Amino acid sequence: MIGSPYNYAAEKFTSARHSLMLPHPAGEAASIASAFFEIDLGLHDVEDQHLDDSARHWLRTLREFMDTSGIKDPAEVGTFKLKAEKLTDDEKADLSRAVDELASWFDRKADHQFASSKLA
Image (cartoon, rainbow, N blue to C red; front, top):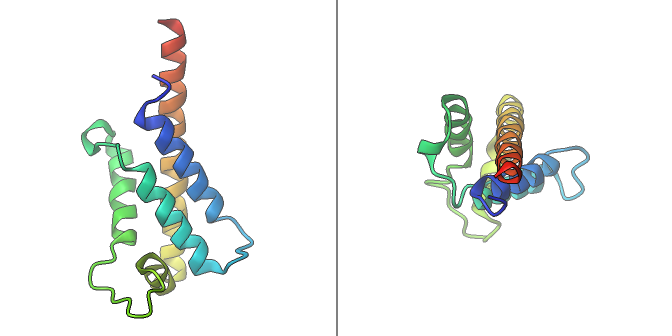
């Protein structure tokens, strides 16, 4: 199943992981906002019930970080960027770990599906 949601999620989470790597040419908040955007795209076709407990835990963590409820954006900077600007250093570290864990998880799932499809 080369066209599975796992492959797309793996691609997008790899992009999100890269967005979080130093240096941050457009600034740290912009890099985190870019990661949020990639994560949002990557999760479009992923259903929570298909994830194991560990992946669901990391996904809940990411969703909490990405929640922009109540954020006002009158200057149209972007709610993801405004949310990123409010993260503490500890939250940024937790965000990076969650992205890394899920990127690895989706990579393993995509690789497994690719290997299974070659055997079929």
